[in-house]
Length: 165
Image 1 (tube, rainbow, N blue to C red):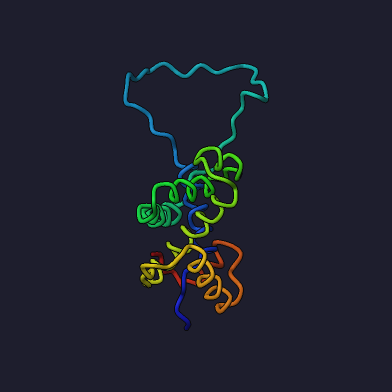
Image 2: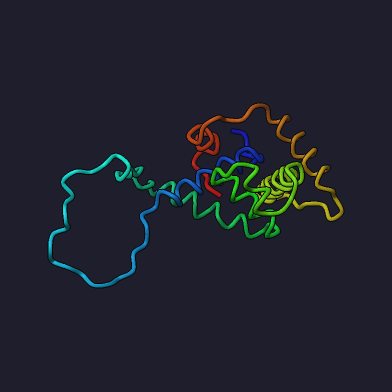
């Protein structure tokens, strides 16, 4: 059996899944006054008032989210913000406005952050005086060496044989 190696695309998928899981968690409510009266039922609901929710996440998804969120602590604050905004599905233009960088700079910071996380999860140290471009190139070479990547989270989980880091 081959050893599982993290790639930037795996990291991106796991962070996107973590953002989706966090969004699907039930909202927290402040403990307050309770009422024994039944809730008021509206007789006619307009389609704009109906808000459909996806089902709550599974326990395994919450565990994977709990493992993935601390990865952002090892990044620079700007890089972590870019990675998280992208994981939540924000468009590049909105991310550029929020961090105050050009599109190419934001994309390079995002790639560098994903590469940094992948290298760290693989147990490798990042060389001290390496440029962002060099680290991205080395990581791409490592990813090409591995071949293709699983396309779905379930295929990724099967490739890891149940190991969650």
